Image 1 (spheres, one colour):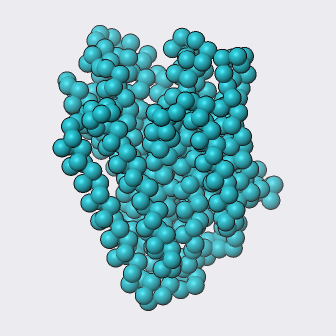
Image 2: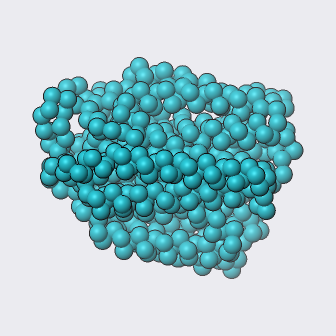
Image 3: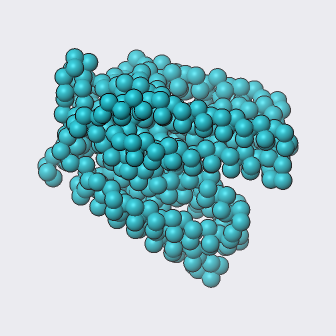
Length: 489
């Protein structure tokens, strides 16, 4: 087995699957650059539009708000139309709101275009299905970790302030952001040209209906419907946070109208779930086609506490360092950025651990480390040496991001034809987790905030004990009606 793991040579570009892996993580990288292009240029934006701190906070929330439903939608589209087409066109279309943001002349235009750009954040889901088509179970964790970790590094977008400076003038930031849109459009065309959904001769399995996840039992049907509720609850929290009495982006009537829209969408999705599965369950699901939905639910919670806490902590960590150690904004930002930079090695590391030592065992170990890491961060105070605080932060960060890698080392091994939809739901829970944890932060001190995450990690760790280690094979039916077996261990 050790010899088999050594065969994944990321420098062997003569191998089609390695070329596909690099093509995929770069697509994810580009999508992240477009998604977070405003973050390193926020100083220019604040000066150009004379933004208040409340308006800046609203833009940051708007940037991730649409990503929650978008990941569910994109997951369904991937399973139905294939990753090549979906990722390529997503990158091309993302250029339009990106250019609109660069051309904005009012705060309202900034807000609307930033909300629309949240859709490109769903690009992550596409590669999960694509990578799983090209790599066997013994290597899929490492491959997914490279895809997620290296692509996620695009959130840094460190070169944009330099590009804005080179372009010069008061509108340098506009040119820098517009360049990310051009990059997205060009790379989308390249992706459509070079990517393939599967290796030559392999079948791409599609669900019978992509409007909702197919489940295997009536109990799982109600379980699935219940697990959709937190996603819409997170959207309602966003609407509340942006409304009167909070960030005041809009008035009470608009807030009530948006809440009504979200509740209506929730009812539509629940009806789709019932419609897709009711007849299927009435006629019975063949034994070879069954899977346990609790696998999906457990991974939802695990990604909620890993990626959700990462987004939340990255958002608050610079200010935490400033307040605790009286640092300058630049120094605090550089030190806090180490939390995100760990993605380069931590996500692939979590995937590799899952491939090598088992999915369930690795995820449980990493969640345990995450829980202890946040417990340690809750003790950081002004009396700590700064170097020790940074080390504690980096250590916690490793377990957080390795845990993310372990989650998506398992997602592709549940049900192949539904991988996009499963990845979409798990990914959406990550964003919902960020909303929940940041909401908690508005009511408590940072030390309590870290303890709340540690407590949620403890609950998730307990649920992981019911996670089934993938074994044997997934059975899927190809376009010719033949049952094919896909090895998962």
